[in-house]
Structures are given as structure tokens and as C-alpha cells.
Image (cartoon, rainbow, N blue to C red):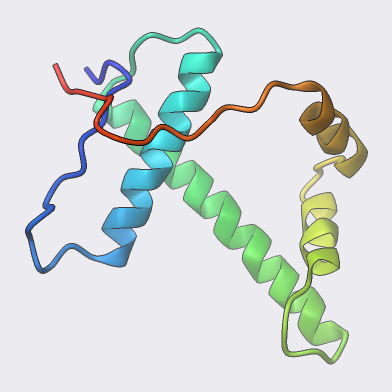
Length: 117
């Protein structure tokens, strides 16, 4: 069980890939969100599944935004492509904007506050 803790692994390993780092940062973000929602612990397996789901979602949004960019005969994706891609996935941008305005921000944890048990 992970008690909303996290330690970067393979710190001195030269083979520590960018994807490993991205998964580690994403796991911290997911753990913080779950903690703010009232969860106190999560298993490593569940956290891994949630990371995979978020990665899949972000990749899909990126692909869709890139397709929209290409359809517009452009080579660089802009924010409007991303907004349209989110809307195509069923995300209401007005509701998302309202949520952002009315919710408390969650500062990203720095340092070694997290731990494994």
C-alpha cells in the first residue's frame, strides 16, 4: 500500500528514462488529487492503472489536437486545437473553466515529504 507517499526511484541509475520520470511525477499528481478528495491510501496496482489511464487520455488529446492542426494546414498545435480536442472528448470547457475558478489550487509537493510503508 502506498500511503500517499512517493520517493523517486533509480535516482543514480543512468538508465532512468524520461518516461520513468514522467510516470513518477504523474503518480505524485494523482496521489495529491486523491488525497484532496479524502483518500488516505492507494495500492501500487491501482495507482499504476490510474497513471496508465491518464497517460492514455493525454496521448489521445494530443493526437486529436495534432489531427486538427493538420486539417487546418498548420504544423504547430495551438491552444484552440487542444480546446477543440477536449470538447470532442466530451469535456465541457465552460464547466472546466468554472471549476478552475471556484476550486482551491493544490500546490505541487516539493521535497521528500512522501514515504512508502
